[in-house]
Length: 376
Image (cartoon, rainbow, N blue to C red; front, top):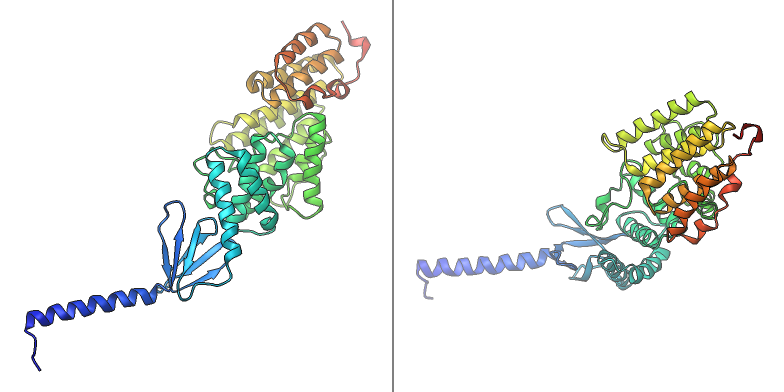
């Protein structure tokens, strides 16, 4: 037999080594996952099916994870079988989120609703993604009632350690304040009709065990204009502290107590904003102070409360909260006999393209009884 020369032998050895190396790579990569959106493919020795996606087990002991909406195809000798339903489900979620990312709420929301009905009891990254998608769609339509269930789901998930990075919506403005889990779009101060419906949705979520968010009942009480002196939980969160203070402001009859509570709320709000209180919290504070003052028996307090409500309208403009503040200010003016100021405010309201719920709000009914002896 002819022995090859050393250079030829070296070439042959390198060729065999390269071939064996390729075979080894193929053998190790027994699961191959193609992903959407330009994400790199994932290879591993095996894959485990989880509720939110696939966990790919690496031969080196390092796991990688792909949510179902990211997974396009799965192949390989050890690829899990019978996952067609999960892949189809993931495609629906992918279509929903890509539509929302391009601001196509009308086409995104039906897909989010369809997937939500199948996944809403599950925790994890995919559940958060769908909950946030539904919440964003509801808020985009101005439907605060529909927003309650996904909002509470998202609050629970993030409070339990699921961060905002679990969803792919980081290119959009935050839907929740990370420090409070409040949405600036869902205020505890709103028109009577809407307040009743939003409060009922919150109360239903608590009663049915749909949420364990401890401050939800307080939020509902403020919506219903039924604050209480309720004891805090053992370890109140920032959110709970803020709502407790709002309830106490609304209940305070003593001016010094009210001022102290207002200062306390402002201090917490500044901590939330890292120095500057978020505008939505300042508006909530002013609404609470305004409502508390216009319910007092003396004219001076009522006028001060009206000015506080008008300050909300000045900062909130034509938003739902701004319109509500104008309506309540006009109602207060009529209640204490200042018809001229009431008409001026009502003329401003008439220029706004308002929410029909707000236009039908029975604000004067919530105003204090008039003491005729105190009228000028």
